Image (tube, rainbow, N blue to C red; front, top):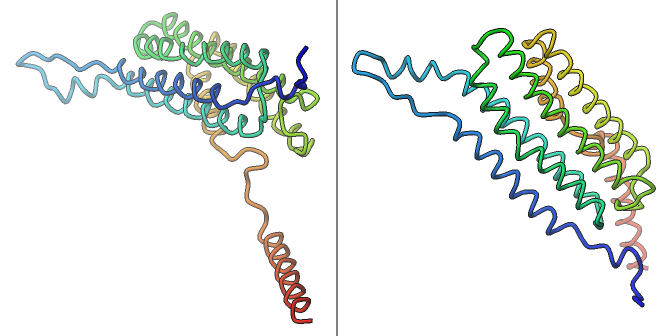
Length: 235
């Protein structure tokens, strides 16, 4: 019979974060491999050939931003986790499976964004669908960790946790909307995806610096405390 409590049996998150960072690094590196070096004939211009690769550049930029934002959110959330368990490990594996898959729809998007309307629509639907599923698993990961303070610091403000949860639920819902819109307007879906990436670049709840008035008030309180301590020492 083990004498360790449930929190002691549960492991930390260091190895989980290290493994996750490795998957993110590989996925984001694979993106550039989809940009092929053009082979031109003597009568062709290398500059024109390079400019003709613009779909690959767009796919690379959008997906690099997407994976970067996903990594930043993943990293920030794990700073709040004090422990891990089997459920978290399993959900994180499913989430990373989606992240590792992103280079494929990126290549698909670059290849068929100039194709027929049906091909372009399908490519963007696969791309937005991949991001939607990734967002769903990330949200499930967070909901699992935060439910009843299962894995997060119990001293965290419940209002902060609710704000983060609301942010991820809305984000996942909007990625699903982007997937649905792809069957109506491929361009609108792609614009929404880029907009969501830029939106999630913004600081998350709890990361914004406190107002200057709060800092000044805190500083004044600290100064008063220091003066009190000095007077007490002199007395």
